[in-house]
Length: 132
Image 1 (cartoon, rainbow, N blue to C red):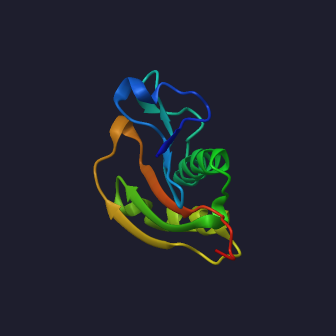
Image 2 (tube, helix red, strand yellow):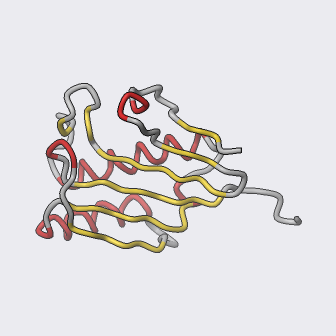
């Protein structure tokens, strides 16, 4: 049975979504620097690096609620609003996951809600009984 995760009790359900879902083996989490009251980019997301760290911090909170951490992520799908953001995004992303190993990643340039420039989805493997 899936476990729906919203550790900060934010109003995601109002928009028909949750920031994370966990199954027995996997956790699916998303993050972005979107203020859910104004539906605009959060004020503290001044730079692409800020926005990247905020998105990954939201994902980290969801993962922790499921008993995981960033090191349990095996795959990310990253969305950028503009390809000119790519270098700054890569640097901030790499800094958060350093020293590695790094998850598999795909990065796309797309339209993103609320003037945000970065959105990240992650899939993590839940720690389990390694002997099983």
